[in-house]
Length: 139
Image (tube, rainbow, N blue to C red; front, side):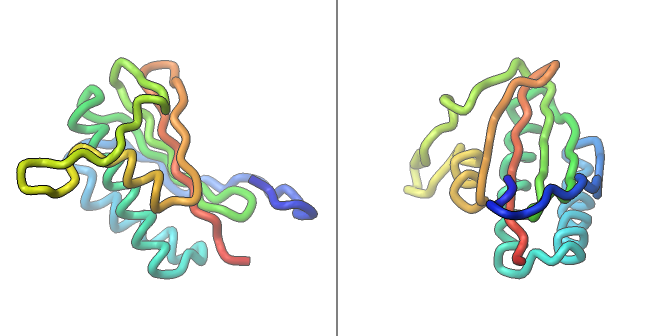
């Protein structure tokens, strides 16, 4: 994700953690702290946390009950990877927003995350899928 003329900087690991329902509150706080420390301003920092929480919640509910979450700083951006323990899927199954009985969007965590981050990818892991969410840092 380098921009033209920029030099590639080494990746800096910030956080690696199991991902379970019990871990979510702690992970939200840690991600907020790291993103703030790395210079991601509001409201983008809040968007990043909402996107990660949406994917993490879907992972816990639909992909084997959890997995792992890692956060790192790479050349000019923050990158969160969520590895699940499910049967795997690809980006072509990311749903659009569906409407529940009350008219509100439901089942759209990946869709939402893709709209409020700078980049979202889905790839196959050794087991399950890997969702990567990216937010560019200001220069």
